[in-house]
Length: 128
Image (cartoon, rainbow, N blue to C red; front, side):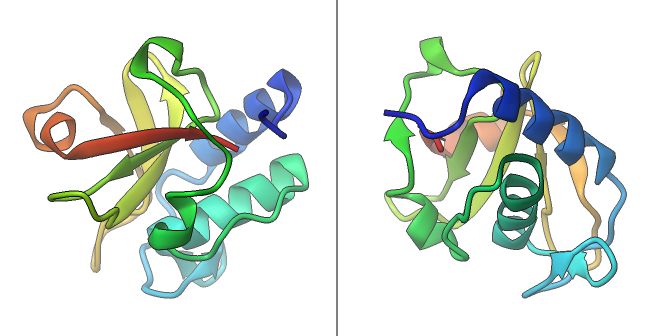
């Protein structure tokens, strides 16, 4: 059962979109210091929904409930990796897009799940 209400999912989505452009920083978990992918997720769900998420991509793999791509909705987590190990995560914001903190030297950005790079690496969808 999801802990995230539809209203909380909407609030998390809007808040995550507002963080686009924030600098990436490994270990970062605030807009002032920058974010890595799990820090962004922890910050968004804490501020917008009052939920405490795991602070690692490995922990996010078991957080919430599994969701199929057919049931994907805004506020869900999209989890990526090269094999079966989750190495990256983002927040689905609708219309084939997700917000994430991609890498060193980058910034929080909006991307399409259906691009060849991300679609090949999508391993799971979780609903907090």
